[in-house]
Length: 262
Length: 272
Image (cartoon, rainbow over the protein chains, first blue to last red):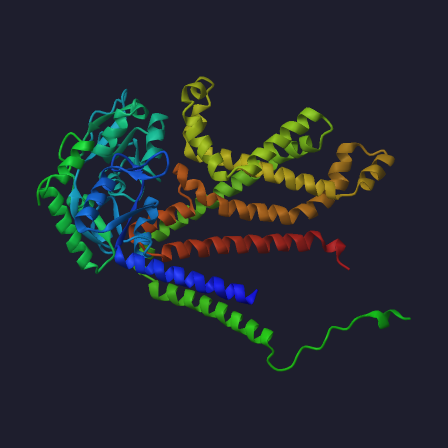
């Protein structure tokens, strides 16, 4: 018994050593994403991540000559999981905000699309100003810039935070919500699908303050990893320059989601 | 041979420091150290501005949690009586229906039940509107109470049934021999004995509901756990979760002591 245990232990430790060596040879960058935010990140039927974020991440890894490994993580636990080392970077349409910058570092933005408001097709709501939505119920995804914005911009409305975008979409289709606020691309994708038959885009709130929304979505990494940040920034510039970004962009969108050059 | 002779005396406690004792003390020290580390963390992590900003929402969250559980457990208690009755009934149909009910609600997660009732029923809005039930199911709060009441009713029915079963058949037969009606027998003889048995499981059920209610934020009812998650999302500070854990712990401890107190009171006649 004892002997066999020792043999097993020895075998296990050798295997681990070999695994470590293999890892050293091929650098793996673990990337976390949510998988509930189409078209940016979504889960396929067999549970794999797909979408704009994922394609961009893959392109960045190719550019940096590292191997990508994707990990699905709930939105609420995204930053803690990064800090705990569950993965090395977040590519999940995470906006670069001052609050998050206290916790993590970001690459430059890799896209920036505006926020918009959608309402049921038969809605009597006329505009997206504060007064138009007074007394109404607005659905948003919790722990997002859209939630922060809606709470601040529509103080006379009830802002209901949902765990993911899918739940507020269900709930406005069910008629429990007067309006929903989210990224215009996410809303458009949903409205173009059969699930979005209930609703239409009403408009884009204006202004959309940078101190809430930030300059756009970036790749989040642990604080102090400047080397990785520099590599990511260089890779973003590279795929912007060599047409890879445009190729991915055009696969998903009819316009350039990068936004203004900064 | 007298009775005293056959009593085995416990062996005298070992002297010195046998391995088991060392291990015991080491483990105890480890736990004490962990507790100290926790306290130390809370003291060092203490940020007045976070407390000031989120304390009011925690108070609201605790209110929502307590109210939700109190109302659901009360409704569940009322519902559990007919269910338990049907479970014990000789009528095959009644027994089967109530068995299926208990089977379903105990066999599926509360999270799934809550989700189905809120989002699932929500997609039958026209049908619900035509029978006038939409006003009820439109509100997340009512949906939560509805789901939680149905869930706890299933558990409470089983507690009640088990407790009534634990009273010996002889009591029923004795009462019948005295010519007491079944209802009076149940009320005056069986239930007072059964409820003593049921008290502990009832207490457990309430405690489980308090902890189980932490999932309710999925349907936008922001209970203690929900406000904690929102606070955490803004601060990224683990103490938000620690505070929630401590509040849950305090609620459960208060409940546990309350139930123990009630138990001491109602079992006075059993003490020797």
